[in-house]
Length: 275
Image (cartoon, rainbow, N blue to C red; front, side, top):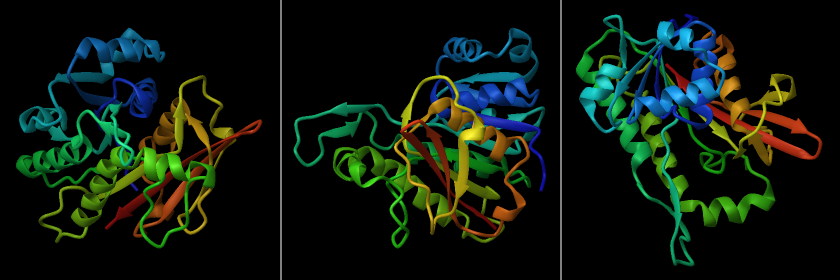
């Protein structure tokens, strides 16, 4: 197992990927991040406890849009070489509409799948022998067919009716990543993908990794809520700092991270494939 020394971030201005970036920078790991507004990303990192010194020494910000292949290509490189790992927290902004069937939609209905496609295209155009791991922030409630339910029964209506449209974009991206890693060696652009699937997300102080446990797809740990900061910390500690754990390799499980606090339970599911 190799340890990442260069990590690219997309959609890290806020949320889970933003907290993961903050932890990565504070650990002294070199990062490059794509941001439409660099000043906003810098401000977000300082608010998450990253010092100006760490930002100057370990973060390179590329201004651009995730659908711009040239900007993405630039954001996938540091010091002339392709990064070891990619973290994508790209997601759409939900909005309400007058519809009984689909009351919630995204302002940009294909942003996740388009971001994933652009990253893969950019890697193909870079023609690097290095194949990074792609860590994608997804969601519970879209488990593959045949896998146990990974959300509480009380969330069934919320996930499968109210949020059906927003989740469809993430589901399509997951399917495309699964298809991509089945390509012949010469056509694959990533070594592996990891779909990090948090349950209902909330802001707030970290409850710590000591409140977190892990499971697998056949026995998912079902939860109600989890803090974005804890998801980001979990991503850094489990997937970025030391790379994907060896015991996960050459499998396609759906793992789970569960956070317990008083009567509040949170979960993060993880599906991945390494070939």
